[in-house]
Length: 552
Image 1 (tube, rainbow, N blue to C red):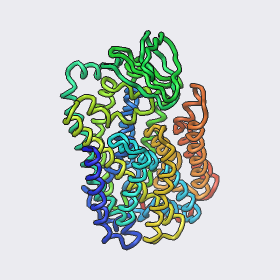
Image 2 (tube, rainbow, N blue to C red):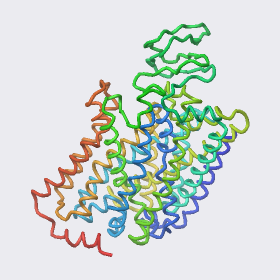
Image 3 (cartoon, rainbow, N blue to C red):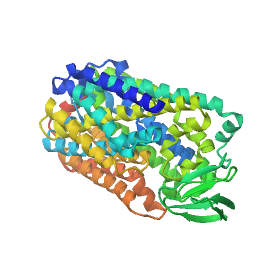
Image 4 (cartoon, rainbow, N blue to C red):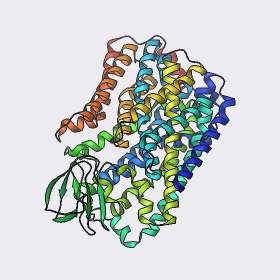
C-alpha cells in the first residue's frame, strides 16, 4: 500500500505539471521544441530525466545480477554517447533550425522523400525504445500492488499520453526535470542505506565477484517458463507438493509452473545461457552475448551501438532544438554528462547486493525486478517497506519521463514528418503511438528491458548516426548516398535483432553478429553512404548548407 501511494503521488504530480504546459502549446514550434526557450539548467535535467529510462533504473541492475560485471559497460556507453553528441552533433543540429531529424535530412539534402524515409525509421526506433518503458511500468506496479501486469502498462500509457498531448515539449521539460530529481533521490538514498545496513559480510561478498553465490535462507523459486538448470553440487529441494527431491550435480530440466524450495547454504544453480553467479564468466568485466565465446568483440560491438546510437536517437536530438543558441545546446550536453555520471553510481549497487540477497531472481525471468525487490530483503519490516516505496516511485518516474520524450518524437515522426503537422494532429499522433506501444508491450513480458533498448540504440547507430555525421561534416554526401545508406542500415540492423529474438541459434559468431549487430551494420551504413555519394555529384547547395551548420 505504501508503494502504491508513492507511485500515485508521482503520477499525480506528473499530471499536474504536464497540464501546466497546456497554455504554452499553441503552435507546432511550441508543441515540439517549446519555441526554443528552454533554459540550460532545466534542459540538462530534462534530458537526463528522459535518458535515464527503464533500462537504467531496472534493466542495468538486472543485467548485473544475471550476466555479471561486464554489463556495467552499458553505463559507460550510455554516458560516453553524450561526449560524441557534444563533439559532433549538438551545435550544428541547433544551427540547422530543424525541429526533428527528418527535418534536418530534408534541409541538408533537399528531398521530401528522404524526410518521409527518416520519419519511418523514427517510428521503428521509438517503438523499440517505448515498449520496455511500458513493460517496466507493468512489472513495478505488479510487484508493489499485485495488480495484473497489463494494468501498469495501460496506466503508464494513459498518464503519459494525457500529459504530453496536453502540453507538448514544455510540459515534458518540467515533468522530466522533476523525474530526474525523483529518480536520483529515490534510488540513491535507499542504495546508501542498503550498503550500510547490509553488514560487513554481505558487503564483502558483493565486492568479491569470484565468490560463489549461496541461498542465505530457505528460498522458494517459482519457474514461470521451462528452465534447464545446472546444479553445481548435490542438493535436496522441496517440490511443489512438499515432497523432498534429491538433485545430483549436473543438468536438470524444471517444468513451467514448478516451485522448488532450496535450503539455506545451497549453491545457487545456473540456468542455461546464464553465467554462474560468482563464476569466472560472471566476474569477467566483458560482455559475452549468448555465450558466443567472443566477449571482447561483444563488448566493443555493444559500446559502439550505445555510444553512436546516442547520436541518432530522435528524442535526444529533438531536445537540443529547444535551446536558444548552438553554444547553449553544447553546454546542455556537457551538463547531461555530469548528471548521468552521478546517477550511474547506483544501479550497480542493486545488482551486486542482489547477487548476495536475491540470487533466486537470476533463475527465472525476474532479474529486472531486483531494484524493487532488494530493499525488503535486506531491511525487513516498516523501513524496508518505505525503501521499496521510494525505489518503486523512482522507477515509475523513469518510465514516465522517458516515455514522454519518446512519445513526442514518435508524434513528430508520425504527424510532422510523414504528414502535415498541426497541434491537433500531433496530439492525435501521441494517442495513436501510445496505443501501438501498449499493444506491443503487453506480450513483451519475458524480454529483458536492456536488450530491447540495446536494439533501439543499434538501429539508431546504423541509420541516423551516419546520416548526421556525414551530413554535418562531409559536403560530398548526396541524396542517393543518404537514402541508400539509411535503407541498408535500417534493414540490416532491424533484421538482425528480429532474427536473434525469434531464432533458436547455437552459441557462436552467428549469434553474436545478430544479437549485437552494430559492429558490422554501422560500418556498412557509413561505407554505403560514402561510396554511393562518391559515384554521384555533390549537391549545388552543399557548401551553403554546411556554412549554416558551422558558422557562429
